Length: 582
Ligand code: ASP
Image 1 (cartoon, rainbow, N blue to C red):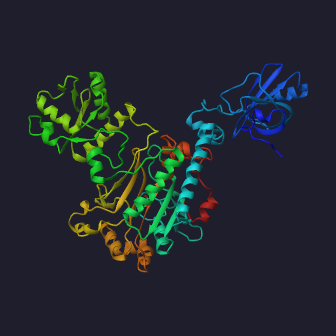
Image 2: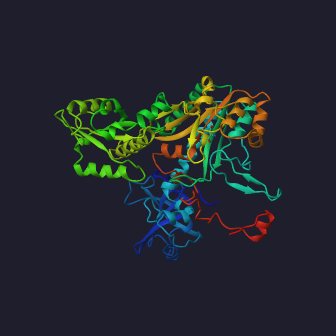
């Protein structure tokens, strides 16, 4: 028996008991005649005491040789501390050690294993197993487990069945780049790792599974943006015999339950907003609605005066910054510099100070009088003491820029409170999206998404205007889930591939298995997938998903601990029929 108790368990009620505990040496303090050691395991820390009067000199010497992170097992008596530590659950007691066994020694760890560590990111990633010994990292992993279990229990209770789908599948050109795996037994052929189990879950519906879910790894070989992982986890779900509302209700139920169970917050019914409305009000298809600062479109009240910049713009749009009139000229100049950075890319910004006496002072006073500016305030909802920030230009660009400004200002104003949860559904996404580079339409969600019933005709004339039965679940400005009602007949699916620029032969070669399956009684179906890593991070009140992944990759897609990816040797290459030409 290695231990009778854990290091987080013992209390006053255990006084005078003989116990055995095991763990890692967090630190020791040697006062000469007395030595204290903090012993740590997953459950907590217990203080050990060795003292000259009650401990043999042999044991004193042994204790003195303990280094940080040594793994030890001790037996001793639980005694009351003379100076108690109210900040520790075990702070009333300590263990007077009678036996000490070193189970393993340790090199001096490269960083301190404490809540606040001196280790930088790279070092902590290289020694991730040591990082996991720290409370914040371990707690995050335990938290992730809690969320996963809540998901599994909830969906299982609702009749969903978890089915595993394969990881070695076929590469398709749609979507992001695939990770591929060469096949040894099939010369010149490759598997791909799934970007999502999309086609398989649809096939499960055709197979009559009715309600499917899977907590599943997905792989996308994308250029890594900040806080993206090449492998990530989805809660992948699909249901048969459903319309959009059925899916929204089912997964609103799940999300509502998670926020209640994990955070103790009842978020009520989720608002639903169309994609067009989200773009108009927030310039963003994943709006953070924890705070207002909604867009006010100013074309009507700002154009046709003498200010040419606005007259020639497709869109003039502004937001009211609460309390922003307190910004100094210098503050505002800095803000203008901020939006001019290449990452945001605005050319400039017009601003209006809303004074406490009801008057206005703007950067374009030459062109607009008080009445004009009062109209701007009305449209943007600005109150006395606010600052109105106005951008203009190409509609899509200017919305993106103002959205970036809105988020930045909200962050600075402390309006993005991680303890507040504001979920919403964004509906009616466009079916297709024009890709400048390839000069063709791409499926905005994926090619299996069904267009709105009454809009199929529009596909022929205005494909860009067609809306899809596609929806996103947004939480605090993050897309945490997305899905759609699927096409479930061969003809529509074939037509869709045609619009996406596939020849019938290409469509058949790549997705023939699915289109064939549609011919054998495919039920109407739809689904959704949640990004588990991000969901867990948001529920945990944090921004970085990496902190909730046990062994994450760095920004170059590397695992610096095991040093992957890596070269493979000649024999392996030959077996795989691969020749490198570097
Ligand atoms: N497979 C989709 C995705 O990974 C989600 C879905 O449509 O269910 O985004």
